[in-house]
Length: 185
Image (tube, rainbow, N blue to C red; front, side):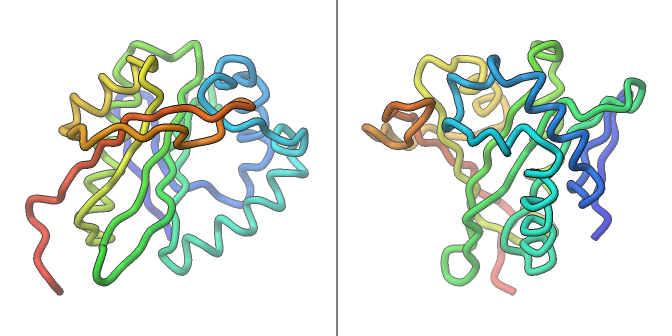
């Protein structure tokens, strides 16, 4: 499945089985930067070999339209600088899924994630025909909240001890975006 979007000198595309080195490098470079926002990861998460195994699963999930894992590439630097993942996709009668994302520490504040999310959310609505996309963020992660708000995600509530992040249960603000053009197929 070839899905990609381009803006400036960035490309957003589905991850490929050949991306194991680049994605491992991305997470290794950003290990400390992302730690406050993510679950504690096994050491294999930061290795190409660990990602080879994970990519086998992700490519299968793509084939069955059960999840979609996008990477953001800086085409000038030829490296992965972020990810956007859609998981827990449920079709009839829910037609919904969750989105999660991360961006390299050195690329923050340039609108890259907002544009990458817009392209991928639009694709999930138009091509994958989802009605609702949900996102959750830790309340003190203002950058994430601002990105979601700018894209039209609406706060639906707060969940106590929602996800086990960096070794502790963290409250999250729950948001969603509804596809205004959704009609039954």
